[in-house]
Image (tube, rainbow, N blue to C red; front, side, top):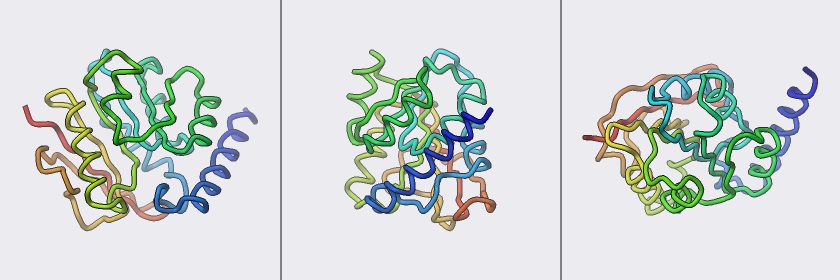
Length: 195
């Protein structure tokens, strides 16, 4: 029992270290809280055969919630830009595929590491609103390209007053949920790919 707590503490420390080194890339002051992680994991698709892509897993709080929700580790592809966080995640969750890569290469990474071109859902903790507009739109376009028709994109943001993200117009907006007990408070947005 002590080992998982130690891993969480080590993950949190590494996350904070990465935030200090690369604040714009990380876009947060602390890892996501468990309530936010559970709110994001709630939207896993029913299809047990689809791949789920997690973007920006950081210290693995959302990853843990996805697995606790029943997602098969073999169906999860986690893409983390920080090589240090990616290595820590792979040690913490040895049964999942963790890729040290860029979300802008999402389509290539999905195909290269799974043999598939589409995913049933993309669960994103990327700080998209702090990205330059062109990069934000590139990532949202890549998410759209890899999602199956009717696939779900779950995104959280600290900008709790807006529901649209640049590049999110080709989606149907489905729901929002405020998570006040998070540091800072966040909003979970859920979009569905049309068709």
